[in-house]
Length: 274
Image (cartoon, rainbow, N blue to C red; front, side, top):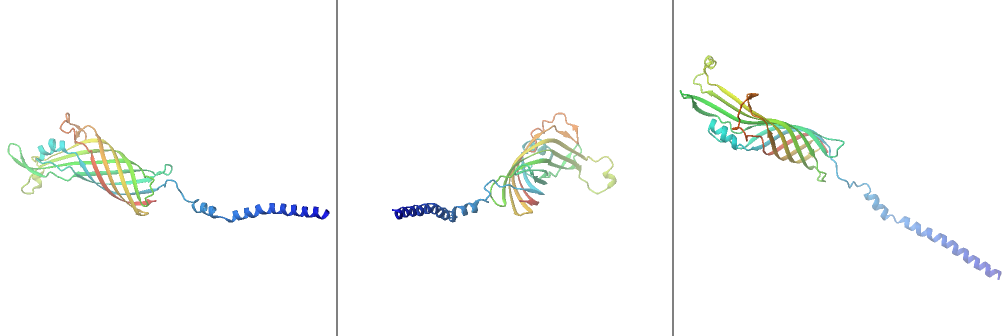
């Protein structure tokens, strides 16, 4: 009887010990299976947020501008030089910019452009009762300076970036007209005797510039960047004057001449582009 009790007690002791040890064995086996933990370790450092960009630099710009010269041709070019000008202006300028550190991917800068019509309007004609032979010269000119505000789209495109933006600035359209006599022989005394029909005038109107633009930028290395831009150059024109502020009175013949039109430009920049 006593032996049986001891036997039962021994069985209970073995069962109790096994019940305490078996979960530990299972837990140890689970801990040794580190497949899931390794997967988490593999991806835990991957940045799945939108990328950020930094750039600071400056460079040169060249642009092809297409102004509407319909009114200019009808009211200025045809009466003065008897020809129509092509609606194109080659412009050159420069720009500098920097990404704001406290606003992600926002970039500000400054730019300037200037250009002159491709047609010079160099024409010989006769004027006055004595049919004096004169040469006439006429150009359409434009120039401005502007603040640029750009946003670099947070796309994972490597070294290629798409950058919408806007330029806001101030500038002027100038119409330069000159007439002078065609000489026969050079005589400096004759040039300054007061009888030459030399005349020159510059007609000007200032404007406020607003230019939405879409820029495509590529940086092959960290210090060099190339840009292709398509934009619309809008201008809100002011009053027309002559020769730096002389009032024209009625200037309806110049109404409709502005600095608005499509612009396509190329640029090359040096700086830091990341």
